[in-house]
Image (tube, rainbow, N blue to C red; front, side, top):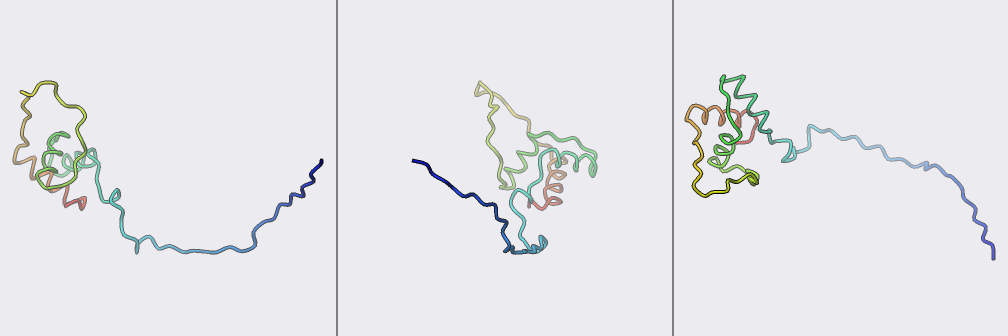
Length: 102
């Protein structure tokens, strides 16, 4: 038994043009978040302070913002973490406000 198939290449003639104005769309949650590196850079430029990821995450937790899970946990339970100084905390809160996260 033989089968003969006729293949044809047709191009669609019907097209729909859609214009999107991105200014009217709401920002996604990823677009409204700043990375830790962006926050560090902002604090360094505006306040002249160097802050660590630990300090940023402490301030974010204090403000009730979402913080990712820490997979780099200490093995012993007796480990003490330094607390963020007041001056650096104010600078981080300012950065969070600048990026629209608060």
